[in-house]
Structure formats: structure tokens, C-alpha cells
Length: 521
Ligand SMILES: Nc1ncnc2c1ncn2[C@@H]1O[C@H](COP(=O)(O)OP(=O)(O)OP(=O)(O)O)[C@@H](O)[C@H]1O
Image 1 (cartoon, rainbow, N blue to C red):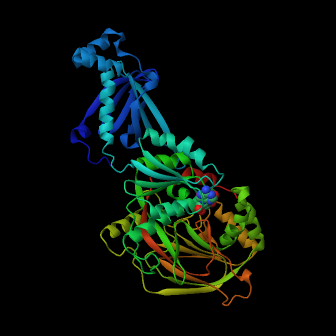
Image 2: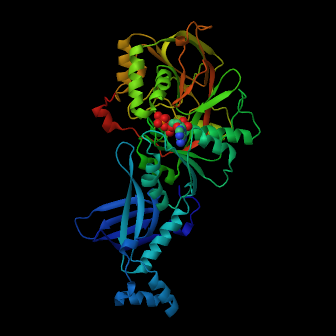
Image 3: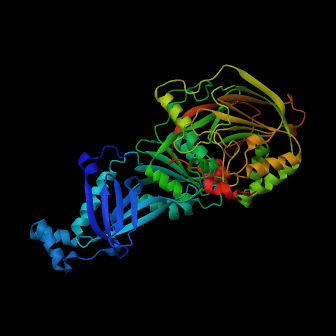
């Protein structure tokens, strides 16, 4: 990860005794790893890789003049002339701070800092210079971000989140920000379609799934137009945007943030963006008979989830609780919707494989193939047709896990394998609907085990609501597309392997939680 670092520095070894929290520690920097251990027994030892450091600076709260004792004077005399001595003393610092990120439980990362004090300011300067130079090699870290804050999403705390939790960390890491506070729906998307995006090495939103969807749609359509292609062309090979995107949770459900970071913790998302690792994320395009309607990253769902999103929009004043209220109404109503789905059969992938976790081999193999310009998703030409009455028809681009549903709609769906999971929940009894909801909310259970649910992994499918013509308007539901309503009832949906690059550090399995289970509807 430490690319393009001066070779001498990579090899340099520093060993110095510093004071940390009033105790003397031997501190060693060797090949990018910092190790500090107490001088006296009982020996306590800690280590930190510089990959986890987000910034270093003088500790201004602990500075003092270094001319106060003879020992320090000697140090200054070694440095040079009277003039340079004066300049040095007026800027001398006796301690420095290392700001770093530390992994806790359940995919949560926290911000920590370490203050190291030394009586010789020259030593402090030397360590700072070495660490800063080493960190210059972390070329994947973003330096200029365009950040959209949605002040309207979730509990309307977007601006507070930015000021209190996002900005302070970005300042410590020296990341420059062009901040935009969205004034209306589609503001972020329109900005990305019209403005000059050169110079940004990341586009980030503080908001929910709808806000992320806006920046993703804006960026993909902008890139497609810049390449002279027609986004509405059903066969368009959408070009990959150069700029990476990031999401900092500030919405109601924050499914996309949860799937990418394994948590909806705000600090974790900010720290991952600063560290700058990324992965390719599949994106699906939604077309009606004449044009492209949108791209989505999480799920496109007809029926139960569509009804909830349509109804809950009337109760935005309730905040995130509107989903509980509308969810209860839709649950009791137990509407079934008729439809026909035609999808391509993907041989390479029964959905019941493994979860998409850190260093996922399935996603990595697709990345390798696309880098070689090979066809990423081997598929037969076989088409399968299913007709029926459904409670819910979903095309899941991600597992769609979120705090309320820790496994999500399709627990084994992958972030970047070029496939989506078609999840068909047949219309049955209220009792089975209850089983579905309890299964979705339980970390120990999987929707795959329910007899009225079938899952198919595919790269594209069409959906036609039935009957045609409709007898009553209540024959039809709408689509819930990343939390927004899409009303078309005849759609073609196609997934695009790793179309965008998202800031991400890998999600790990939370085994410790799995023992206790989760029951949180
Ligand atoms: N200033 C604004 N006023 C009104 N709507 C806005 C404003 N800024 C953005 N929006 C719109 O608000 C919608 C909802 O935002 P967002 O998805 O961030 O929150 P949410 O719906 O509460 O969360 P989630 O999608 O995670 O459930 C977005 O689709 C966006 O277009």
C-alpha cells in the first residue's frame, strides 16, 4: 500500500524514548510499523501500522520553549548559527500527535490519538518528517473531495453530522473539501451533470440511499454523455467514472452505507474515506420500453416494499418512524401482485454460496477479468420465465442488509460480481408474511430457507405487471428503487459489473454477534 515512498525511508529505522501519558516508552518505527513499549516492567507493548495513521502534527497543547535547560541549548548549538538558532527556538515543539484509526467490534472503527513528548525538539521534527514523508506514499488517499450534505434526509441531522463528525476528521487528515448543501431533490445530480469535476478525487454524500443514488446517477450519466454515448441505449456499455464515490450515513435506513461499511457508524465511514481504499460496486440500470429511468445500487423492489415507500412519503414528518407505520399497514393489507418475470440463467452462480466479505474472491475474480477486458459474467443464453402472484419481487444489487435486517434481502449477494439476485416472494398467508419479517430481522436466519421464497442469480431480467389491461389501479404496486418510487410496471433491469468505485475497507463477519442473535423488528 505504501507506493512511491523514498526507498531510504521505507528502510529507515527510528528508535527513540518518548514520554506517552507521563510514562517513558521505547518507540520504534520500522518498515512502516510503529511499536511502543514501556521501558520498565510490567512491559506493555502496542503497535500501529502507518496505513492506519490519518495525520500527524505538532502537539500545540504541550509545547514549551526548548531553551529552558542546558541540555536543550546543546542541541540547538549543534544545529547552526545564532540566526538559525533563534528561528528554531521560536518554532520549536516538544511533542507531536499521531492521529490514527483503530478497529473495534462489529466493523466499527474509531479515531484515536497518541501524543509523544521528547525534550529535544529536533527529535520531534525528525520523527514528524519521517512519518509525513512515508505517508506521502499513500497515493490512494483522496486530497480533494466534493461533498454533498442532504439536510433533509433521515432525522434532518445532515449538517450537524458534517460539522461535528465529518469536518474535524477531514481537517486532521488535511483533506480539502468543496461543500454543497443540497437545496432540493435532484440538486446533487444536476450539479454533477453540469459542473467541472476535474480536480476532485472523490465525490461523497452525507445522506441516505436516495442521496447516494443521486450522486451515483449523476456521475454515471455524466461520464456516459462525456463519452458521446446515449444513456438510454439498452445495449450501452456504460463507461466507468474516473472519480470514486463515498457515502457517510445520514439517512433513515442507510442500507448502502451498511452494506459497504458493515455498520452505519458515521465515524467509520469518514475514516474509510480518508484511508482511501476502494472497491468496484455493481450498479443496475432500469429501462422502460423507451428510455433509461435510473441506476440503482441497492434494491429495486415491487409489491410490499414498493407499497411502503409510496405510502411512507405521505408521512415524512414522522422521520424514520414512517417506515414502521407504513410497513405495518402494508403488512396487514397483504396485497399480492400478479406479474411475469423473464431472466437470464447464470450457470456460474447459485445464490447459496458465501457472504461477500473482506477480500472477497468472487468479486476479485470479476475485477481481474474486467482488467483483462474479458467478459465478466459468463452466462448461458437460456431464459427462464416465471408467472405468479407475488408479495414482493426484488432485484437485489447488494445483500440490502441494514441495522434492522442484519442479513438483508439476499444475504449472499455480492458487491462486485456482476450479478444481481432476483428474489421472488410468493403471495401466501399473513402467517408466512410474519415468518418473512421475523427471518429478515434475525441475524441467525436466512430468507433462502423459506419455502415460499425463490432466489435466482442473474445479470438481467424483465418484469411485466399483470393483468394487461389492468382491471383496477390496485392491481398494480410501484417499485421501490433505492428508496425512491418508480411507477412503471413494465421494466428491463440490467446489472453492470463494478461500474463505480466506492471508498471501502472491507466488511468482516460479526461472529461474536451471531451467537446472541438479533430480533429487532
Ligand atoms: N434540501 C432538500 N429538500 C428536500 N429534499 C431533498 C433535499 N436535498 C435532498 N433531497 C432529497 O431527499 C431525498 C431523501 O434523502 P435521503 O435518501 O438522503 O434520506 P432518507 O430517505 O431519509 O434515507 P434512506 O434513503 O436511507 O431511507 C433524496 O432523494 C433527495 O433527492
